[in-house]
Image (cartoon, rainbow, N blue to C red; front, side, top):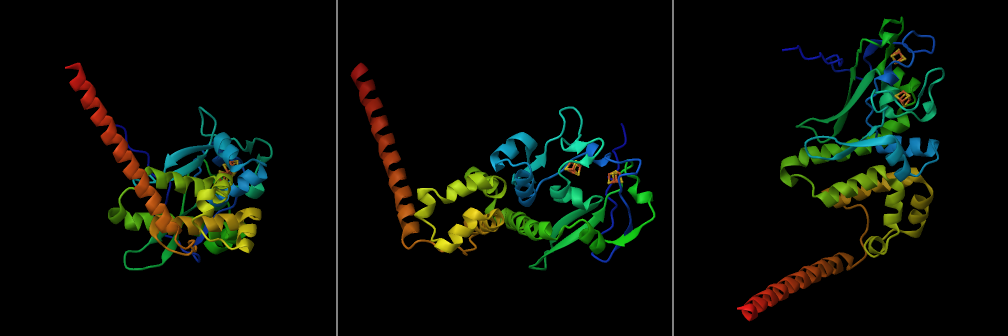
Length: 292
Ligand code: SF4
Ligand code: SF4
């Protein structure tokens, strides 16, 4: 039996003050090697920036540049950057110039060779971020002579705004994981809603304008203007919306009576369906009798 490939992740937890040795620059002999071994999970904020950079709608970006996958056993939907068909080569890498979307490169590319993980300790209510270092044989940056802290590297890679939006996304996933057994697997419709609100912001925007949404949620006109004009405000709203519909954290006002009306409509539909079924079976029985 062949030996399993050892993980490149060094099993030591790092914090903001932890020091590591690393430098990446265009003259290094492994320039672009990491982008030819790409396995990049995208966050909603990554998708917002990359689709803006490429002047694509979120839906077109998802179709053209991503592949879906399941984030964990709870089947929460995730999205990865598409690579070449036969090799894990990122479609954005240019042999001479490097990353063609550099200013808007995803979080995972900014942090590399650091890995970032949001965790929630069992006895704490707040989530925490842990870092680890990834040492892959092709990456020569670890042999360069430069020591720096995780905090300095984050500053250099301009991860601040990314961290701010990603934190809200990770909170949703941690909430699902910690609620796991009590709420079980989310129904298909909730998973679709999660996908749309996190990754397909243009479709989510149309959803907010739909008559069903407008009849249910009480969004003040100023706030509506803001989320229709500014995609980052829309993303913040999408996180609030998901926390409300998936985990009951009520921060968006409901229109008075709308919930009751929706429940009534749903009850009316169920009743109509049941009546149709009874009618169908009765008709079937009568036909059978007639044939006898
Ligand atoms: S997005 Fe840019 S940095 Fe990230 S893997 Fe692709 S080419 Fe490399
Ligand atoms: S040093 Fe590492 S991160 Fe930089 S180009 Fe080489 S493989 Fe990529």
